[in-house]
Length: 229
Image (cartoon, rainbow, N blue to C red; front, side, top):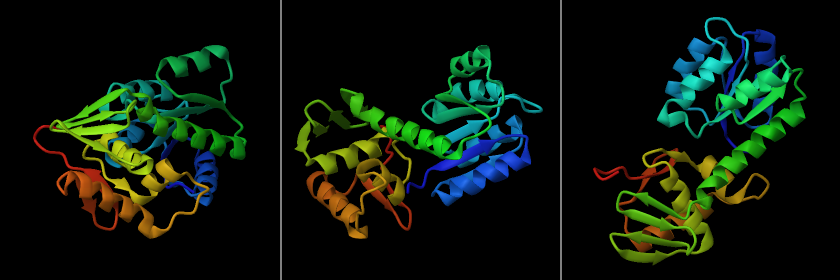
């Protein structure tokens, strides 16, 4: 199971406890907030992969929280899901117009809820492959030809190495945990040995040198953020 980080935001402690228990039981890392103001503060610090927002909350409602998150560059691609007792069409539309990826009506059917979060995550993970060209500093990634160019030098990788390198380049400077990389590249249902990722990283470095991929001990890997990034 993936180690996706979820921020749950709801003013009802019982709902937070119920969702947190079930998400953690299914391999998620969970943080909670009981109002929108606190949610914004926690999101800035924790940078969750998924944010689940109640609509009606004290101090700041979920729609406003979503609008403020989407106005920030670091949250433009974060998965945001509304979870609300309001089932009217206009509430759904308002949530989606604010930039949410989905709108789920309470009461929660937990298996479907978890399946939706995983499905949304998988789609987000794959969006980088729909780009034709990506530029990251001196790195150019051609997704159609499956080629990498660094300072005009051309590199061709096997499929898994290309996907790992491309994934790291989606967010320069971000540390991708080993669990995140396994989840994105191999999926949740395939067993991969601890050494498999290390071997792929070593092979990438053998081709492009040691300057671009940084090992963060005990966590994972990131693309080096130099002055041109």
